Image (cartoon, rainbow, N blue to C red):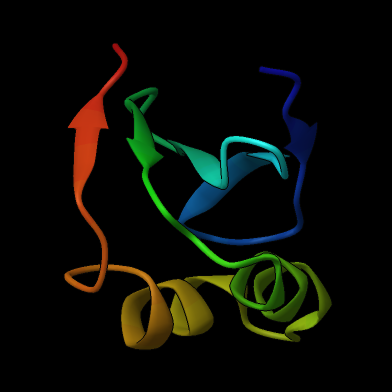
Length: 70
């Protein structure tokens, strides 16, 4: 999945597969996680948020099943 760099103190890059509804998040420490069944609205909200880390913590973390990619 292609990820794009984001301006965030916690997140390094974010990618989204609209067909699979999968969100991939790379953290500054290098770990990558894939979140499943994420609606496009949450991806759009994350990418348009002025605080991506806060949006992630409030709307994605602990809301969706996930697995560690690396």
